[in-house]
Length: 267
Image 1 (tube, rainbow, N blue to C red):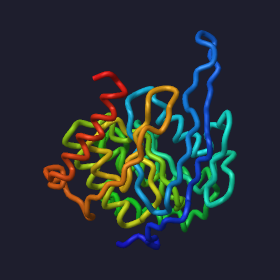
Image 2 (cartoon, rainbow, N blue to C red):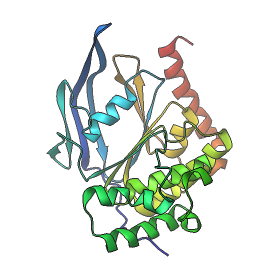
Image 3 (cartoon, rainbow, N blue to C red):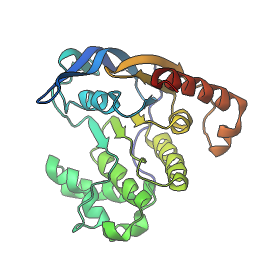
Image 4 (cartoon, one colour):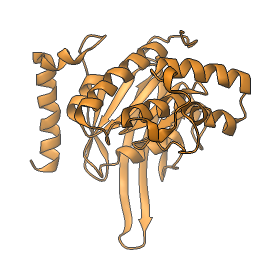
């Protein structure tokens, strides 16, 4: 079954605009902590952007600001020209932990967002079936989370995030808890899903190879307060398979990314 999502070509028009965004958190023990400082970023419609950096550099905070989950201390985020002030239907979010309800089957977990958003039951049911087929879980829709591997749970989480057909998919280290082999497999699966849906994807990671393998561009963040260190175009042909990691082009770009991270972390 082919899922009914119209493909969108990557364009140069601004889909997301992050304008001079800074984020300061007030804590009881350390006073004010600057998580982001003067972030200016434009994301193209349909592109796959990886955000790379070590823990604590503000990657997740940036994602939450784009999602409308956190209001920036200063600056604005615009989605298709409209200021983002709260979470909306235009965004789907996938976190590191799949967070599936153990008492609900795979399909019923995927349908959860439809229930929350009040979507048509018949339409949501058909779309859930299509999405489960797309992520390779059509055979597992009646199973429960404890019967799934970690990778299968994350596939269900991705299907859930896509159920209401958001144009933007935000992913916060979704494969961080998986073993290396499963992580590579999920990377290939994510590229296949992205190729079918052509959502705009912002993918948070601290893994250089993962960031480079998946993305059209890689945003490297500097240490707290989080700032943009460099934004790199990835000139690797698509579609990609794991063999691309053995090419000189991949190796040179990965070396440059590691240099940026090493220069920042003192390695």
